[in-house]
Length: 252
Image 1 (cartoon, rainbow, N blue to C red):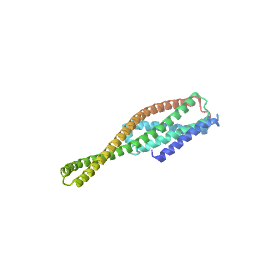
Image 2 (cartoon, helix red, strand yellow):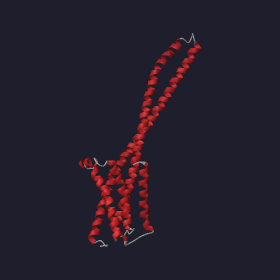
Image 3 (cartoon, rainbow, N blue to C red):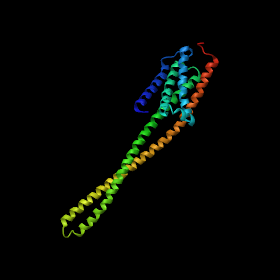
Image 4 (cartoon, rainbow, N blue to C red):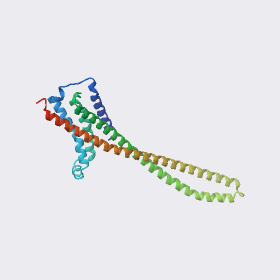
């Protein structure tokens, strides 16, 4: 996700939280069982099932290969993200803040956890990937600078040989040879300091990359937890739908 899409999804997540907090001021016992409530709930269920379809496509190679010929995975991911946020928003509208049944309460709880964990995880993973690319680019630049500095130091060998010559001729031209010697030593010292700074910078960047890799590993484990919670959410959703069908739809 780019910055604009991340801000848009973040706004939708904030809207979902506001809808959830609406139970403090509003509650309707009639809307969930009405025809309008049924339509909103059906749309919410369809949108919430889209991420499940995406997950199935992503993990089925043959299906993924055939579908990505027409729709890229990046587009499918965006559909998955937007549907995964809009579905719970409609589900909260469908509930009308009537949290009476245990199944409904558990469903709303898992729904909120899945959306929040998905958004935070996707945002953090995207941020880590961006930082990793930037750090690797900086590391590449510093490595080139290090190679250049090493070459400069190799060229300094001839300067050292010339210093030996100036020492041998110092009795003949003392002031001239000493000035050359001092200049050459200063240049060599500056090159060594520059080389040490580059080495320190490379060490810091490599340590930062190692930390980012560790964080990325931990958040890849988060993905497994997110999938587990999502599958639990779908189980509760199917129980909720089955119970409504079994006990009858009030608007019929």
